[in-house]
Image (cartoon, rainbow, N blue to C red; front, top):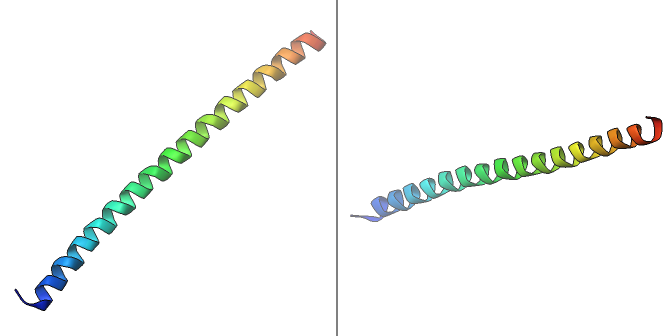
Length: 60
């Protein structure tokens, strides 16, 4: 096993790690986006509920 082989193996390992890192990073981004979406949806729902309640209460 000469220098070139070990470089090739290191390059391969690095490449695989890089791919895994990108996949994990992508998954984290998706999770973060989903959580943000969930929070916004909850806030929006609460806001709309308050709005509906206020509308009923004041203009009912």
